[in-house]
Image (cartoon, rainbow, N blue to C red):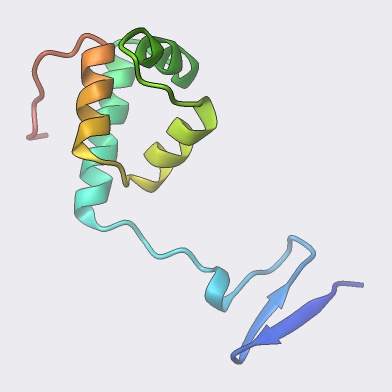
Length: 99
């Protein structure tokens, strides 16, 4: 039997079947989606996996883990510094901002 709890009038069931209310993640804003797409596209264009990106970042002195990179890219929220570090690490010298 599923165990549930009501928080602030929202039902949350902890059996991996239903999560509502506070558990809902808001949609990315267009800027987050855009920067996420730019970085993912450059990685794909060069055939660079997240694991390889970790190695390439380490070569330029940036310590990251694969789960951290995966989470940053999934959220679409990361600093301009991180974006530039990634671009430098994968050998990207120019960015095209239009689609």
